[in-house]
Image 1 (cartoon, rainbow, N blue to C red):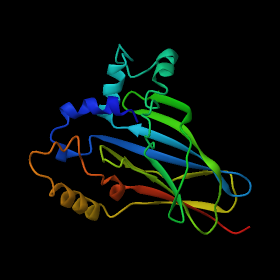
Image 2: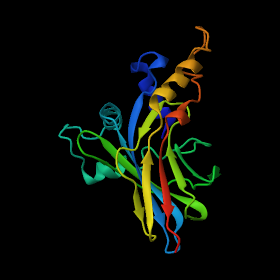
Image 3: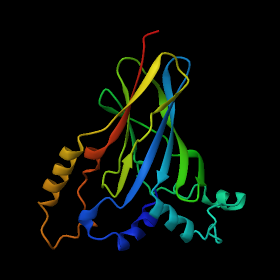
Amino acid sequence: MVRTVLSVLVLAAGPAGAHPHVWVDTGVEVILNDRNEATALRISWTYDDLYSLYIVGDMGLDPDWDGKLTPEEEARLSGFDMKWDPGFGGDTYALMGGAALELSRPSDWTARYDGTRITSTHLRSFAAPVPVGAEPLIVQAYDPGYYVAYSIPGPAVIAGGKGCSAQVFVPDLDEAQRKLMDALSEYTPDVDLEAEFPAVGANFAEEVRVTCAAP
């Protein structure tokens, strides 16, 4: 996500304690080869109505406000959120056995606007095929600084492979909120929370767990 664009919304978002500022419904598709090795992830982000409206207006799209983009406008929209700052992890994290797995920078991106919300997609490849068996491949969606709230409202999709399944897990949100309030309580009133918000996003992470039966 483009931090320079997202940060503009802070001006209208109220106090820093009101984190998050942007809400994103996330789709996760895990791509497997015929050996049940994960090779890539297809990630989709559907932005909340307000942020979608802001992007459409800021980019000068849909000037007649009929909720429909021309092919040329849709081509301009594609990739609007793919200009990642150096070091940005893409708010998608993959793990196996507690160890982080390397993901590529995004590729093969798309974007569309349904008149209310923008949905973008992108592909991220694993540095090497990841064998998936009884030990789950875990894919998490979160912003470490909790500026953006990601949820995974639908089922995960598995493309390819054989005898594999995926489940979505949601954290204890009450506990995550308690940890957030505990972290905020340590700041003095003179601290700019917007600039130094605690890295609590992982506590709110929803995740997909993929397992495959033994051949």
